[in-house]
Amino acid sequence: MQQSCRNAWCKQPFEVTDDDLRFLEKISPIFVGKKEPLPPPLLCPDCRQQRRLAMRNERTLYPRMCDHCKKHIISIYPADSSFTVLCPACWWGDSWDPLSFGRAYDFSRPCFDQFRDLWYAVPKISILALNDNINSDYAHDGYRLKNCYLIFDGEQAQDSYYGEVYALIRDCSDFYYIKQCELCYECIHCQGCFNLRHSRFCNNCSDSMFLLDCSSCRNCIGCTNLHQKDHHIFNKPFSKEEYEQQRTAMNLHTFSGIRALREQAEAFFLTHPRKAMRNVMSEEATGDNLTSCKNVHDSFDCMDMRDGRYCTNCIMGGTDAQDIDAWGDHMTLVYNCAYVGAGVDHLIACYYQSFGASNLCYSIYCLQGTRDSFGCVGLKKMQHCILNKQYFKEEYEQLMPRIIGQMREEGIWGEFFPPTVSAFAYNETVAQDYFPLTKKEVLQRGWKWRDRQEEMSAVSKVIDGKLLPESIESVPDDVLQWAIRCEVTGKLFRIQPSELTLYRKLNIPLPRRHFDVRHAARMQLRNPRHLWARPCMKCGKEMQTTYAPERPEIVYCEECYLKEVY
Ligand SMILES: [Zn+2]
Ligand SMILES: [Zn+2]
Ligand SMILES: [Zn+2]
Image (tube, rainbow, N blue to C red; front, side, top):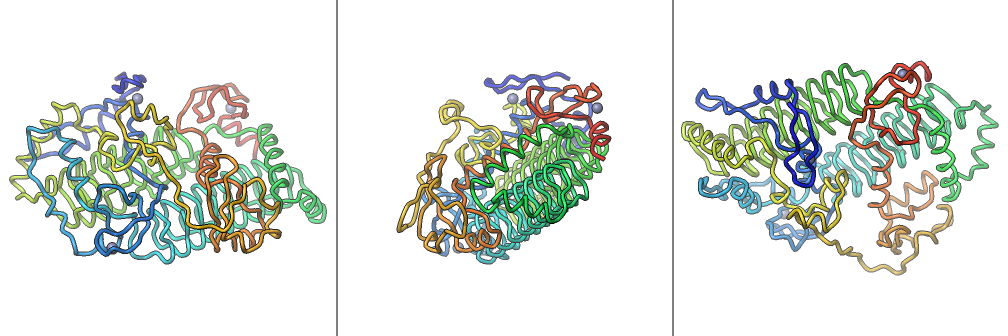
């Protein structure tokens, strides 16, 4: 069935397949024996994803106070926000009762307005965290962290800084999507790597720099598509002595040495083929960076998924999932949700549900086995609640079809919360990473924008990024008292003591750019989450790929790529 996106600024045509309709039929909830069918979505897949991501502030942190214990904390909500914000210890504690914010559903008011009022009223957790982080206050949605700073969305990290999406890492900085890595710097989509720098899409590589699509390589520089190689530079083998000589001559401990190598490496990579879709050990899978997935389509950056469509960042696996952004782990029958996982099932249009939540619609932060509820916020171990008000089972089952009936009339049943319900300004959210908009565009759509003022504690000196020493050996410890002015945006930033220790350990120069600029540059090195149809540049077979037809890379279908590389 061909639809066109209802967003006036988009109007993209999109297809709702028979499989999509079967999935909607399967996940439609049942009350008193009667199914409440979910209609096909009104928005195109991109606009649907944009809405979900607009609920999430991942990287914008502010200093403020916990509104309960008055401790100074770091939070995703600024001090001037109108919300009640609690530190994780207070939020997880018994000092407040989410049911005290409960209210009766009012059939004379729009559904999302009522939900928004409740969502804004219930205390917010300052950052998503349990009580298991040590010296890692500047981290959001991270678990079992020690000595970490500005890392987001992951678990089990030590002495790591400035990165997003990670698991089991140590001594890493400036990364996106890495797992089981140590002493890695500027790595993107890498797993099981040690002392690897400026590399992308690598597995089990070590003591190397500027690698792309390599596996099990050691002591390599500027290589692509290599497997189990040692002492290679630009894909050519060298003796150990020659390799060391060449490496020393490149001055890779200096800023200009790294910049020159980056330019050479990127130009070299353009002369070698890339695989149309980086899917590994996957069957019937379309999308990119899918590992061990089966029957998963139009999805990106997922692992261990079965029967899914339009999913992103579901790295912990799941089954029967459609329109889900992160994260998985015993997740089944979920539709149009973001950041749900750890034993969840039957969720419709929810944001952040975890720890055994099931049979929930339009709810946020409902945890620990909360089930059979609608439009709720912050519930733990509850059942049969609507807008945080508790009902008997029979009352609940009678009310739900009426509420869904009203939503159907409003044309919102099955649709995700609009950005006007988000607790954040659009430019604070992950949506701005994937669907960047100007302030004017955001305000025209009636969404929120926040102009950020950088707060900087007293510094003894401000130095321009481009005037920083070429190498770390000329940097005095005094640098910890300085602010550095980003060479791109002019924004000031500081170096953390443990971060400086890591740069010294790795013998790499100080960054000259603000971490927001570094993050944006890493995002640029990944392909867009969009599939284009184009012919294989070797055999001419039609294929799907995230490389747009006008891009300069040589792109091969999987068969041709594997023939060329192995
Ligand atoms: Zn659209
Ligand atoms: Zn507190
Ligand atoms: Zn081919």
